[in-house]
Length: 262
Image 1 (tube, rainbow, N blue to C red):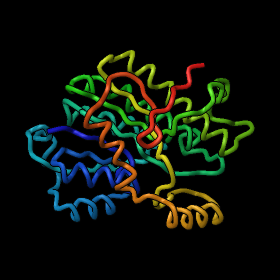
Image 2: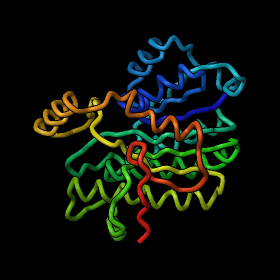
Image 3: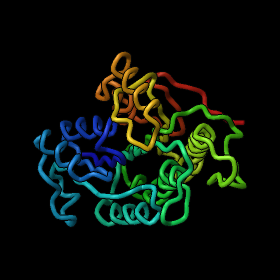
Image 4: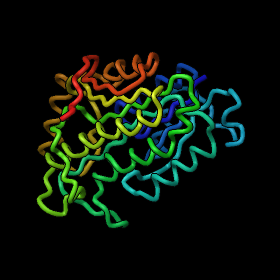
């Protein structure tokens, strides 16, 4: 029985993965902001709550939830420490948490929220759980940072974009940083599969975030007309987790895409 950790596992594609691994009989640990959404997912799947943390690796099928705001560095560190306490092995780490912001937003910790959510928290999970992944027979990290950003997308002098912030620049920077994170992750463990992944087209999701009505309406209309259901869109992720290949890779849907190396 595998242990699958999913950030953002209560909405959209994350929720679809949660449903799948519930049905498959794996241990699923979901990190998200809304416990009620998780409990609705768990109840619909007929999955019992998790046992006591001391029994978390006993072999019983269960689903568990850790409430957190991953745009908080403190919350991200707290979750990593809880996962380390409660799990000796993590077979798959799916980094799918998302909250879209079109404008620069500072957290109460004084950091730019999107940079922390879409990169810093992922860095903390990948590095903080490295030994738990190493304990798995075929470990994999699936990072839903759409691959293909330019090599020069990161402003190393100002990664939180205190000057000249734009949604497009912020998005490209996060995506490139997550591709580079794979270099660190696979250098630490040659057996690890590290995949940056994005859907091959539109997906019908709740589109959580602080965005204008125009973007929300456009996404809702196009998603309804042409978007895939989340349960269909995540099939390539499931296949990658079921048969991981060590090393770095990038995909749009099922199609392998070249890694940006220079």
